[in-house]
Image (tube, rainbow, N blue to C red):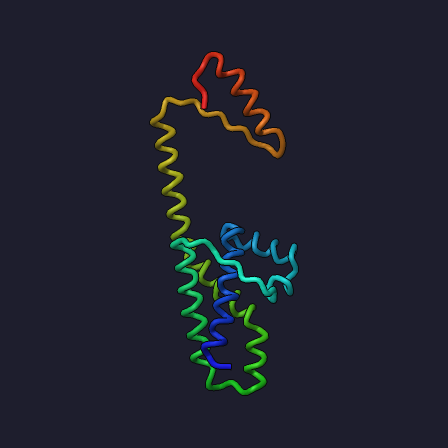
Length: 160
């Protein structure tokens, strides 16, 4: 197989791992839990390729993973024999995960800055508003509680 064919296999694995990281909110603990739930072999060698959402962070993850993966291939390809090349093909998901994990780790500080900026904006809007906010949390009954509160409070207040 040519370097281009092999690179496309790596890219498809990268996209699948980026998708999984995305749905697990780019958290390594949740990704690890996913591997435990699904099974490492199935997660690494499944034939389905799921496309991540088009976002700046995912685009950056694809670029970083592709550059690191391609650099790895270009640097080490001349030293491979048939055995090492076959071994490398079998290990594509592992190297792909390593490259995507590296990219997630690199982009996390920027994502955290953006997240904090959004939270700060929301806090300012809440402070500037005269609205009274009521939060309902828990595992069960949130919608029912919200509906009860709406019925009770809407008799005397404007509610949303």
